[in-house]
Length: 327
Ligand code: BTN
Image (cartoon, rainbow, N blue to C red; front, side, top):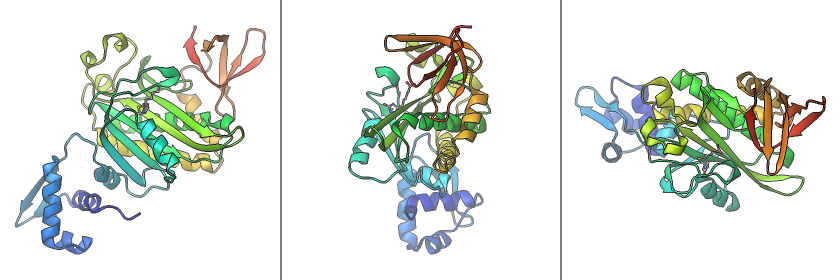
C-alpha cells in the first residue's frame, strides 16, 4: 500500500530537519504547491508545529501528544505485516472488538487499531482495563497465523518480547515479565496483553493481539485499587514518554517478532522471554478456574505453555490462569 500523503509529508519533514521547500515537497509528492500548503494547514490544525519561511521552506518544529495514523505510518516506515494499515479512534469500547469486526469483514492481517481511550477496555479473565485518554497505548492487531489453537500462547509470548524490547529502547528500562502476559517494573504491572482467538478445534481463523501500556499516568491518575499493583513508564523513569515514538518502535518489534514466529523460530523468542521472566525458577502457585497447582516454574514449552515441576517431580503443563510467586 502506498503511504498516504500526510505520512509522506511528515516523512519528508523529518528527513530534512533544516527545512524543505514547498516546491520540492510538491515535486516529490506529485502535488501542486497549493495542495501541499492545504495539507500542511490541516496538520497544523491537529497540532503539528510546522514553520514556513521563504528561506528554509517548511520545518517540523513540534509534534502534538496524540496518535495520528499517518504520523505513525511515517515513523514506522515499511513493515512486512504488522502496521501496514493503521487506524486511530478517539474513543472505542474496546479495540479488540473493533478488530474482531474487521476480521469478520475479511480485512487482511496486520491492521492495527489504536484508541486514545476505551470505555470498556478489558483484560484477561474478564477484568476491566482502565484506559484513560492519551495516557497510554491501547491497541489491537489482527493476525492470521498458521497455528494450532493450543499454540496461540506463542502470540502472547511474542507480544511480551516486543514490549520488553520497545520499553528498553524508548524508556531505557529493563522490565520483567510474569507468565503469561504481564510486563512489570519493580513488581508492578506496566503493560498487559489480551490475546483472543477465533477458530475451529484444530485450526486458527484469526488472532487478536490486544496490548495496553500504561505510559504517562501520574500515580494519582490510577484508580486507588490499582495504585499498589500498577505503574506507568512515566513514574518509572520520572519523565513523560513520547507515546507515538513508543508505538512506532513497538510495532516494528512486533513485526520482526511475528516474522520469526511465521518462520517457525519460536525458540529464539521463547529464550528471550525466559531471560526476562521473573517467574521462571521460582516456586509459584497457579489458579485456573477452580483448579490450583503449585510447583517450580521451569520453562516454556514449544507452544508457549508454562512447565511447572510439582513437589512430586511431575511436570505439569499450564496453559492459562493466574500465577503468583510463592517464594
Ligand atoms: C491483561 O493484562 O489482563 C490484558 C490487558 C489488555 C488491555 C488491552 S488495551 C487494548 C486492548 N483492548 C482491550 O479491551 N484490551 C486490550
